[in-house]
Amino acid sequence: YSLGAVCCRIDTSENSRRLYIMTLGCLYPYRRLGIGSKMVEHVLKYVHADGNFDSIFLHVQVNNEGAIDFYKKFGFEIVETKEHYYKRIEPADAHVLQKTLRPKLMNGDAKLSEEKKDKRRRVSSDRHNISRQRKDLYEERPRKCQFFNQKKIRK
Ligand code: ACO
Image (cartoon, rainbow, N blue to C red; front, side, top):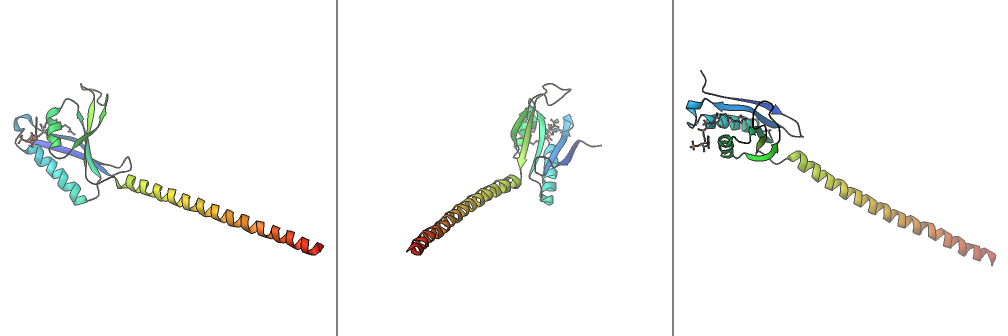
């Protein structure tokens, strides 16, 4: 029979590809023997082999200090606390623990492209202004010419 189990699913919400640890646990008499670590190491091996995950995350009850310490050893951090997350257990609040595997490229790209778009907008508005000024100059010139010509004609 099994002494521990871990179950995960791939989550593609929030513009990223993340592995969600739905549950991870080890039978009480067999705790602190390294079984939990083996399961997290297995998960880490999986995400690294895949190479295309932004992060790993999970929910944990706010009072589960043992599990929080356990996950922190693997580089997980509390990134959010959700009130009334659990419906049938007390306390109902949950921390979201997350281990970042790579910076949020989607957001970074979006920010970068926003900056690029801003620059493009500025350049195009500058170009527009310059061409307007040129046009004004161009439009002024014939008027002067016309005036000059009229004078010339009158003479
Ligand atoms: N208190 C403080 N630190 C802990 C604890 C604890 N209760 N448990 C583990 N750690 C830390 C320790 O630093 C430990 O190293 P050490 O024993 O040399 O001091 C290290 O984590 C590694 O411990 P493991 O022996 O590998 O962990 P274990 O096999 O005991 O599994 C687990 C830890 C999974 C949290 C286990 O206690 C458990 O099954 N708990 C009940 C289920 C649970 O709470 N699961 C997590 C809920 S969140 C979720 O499932 C998504």
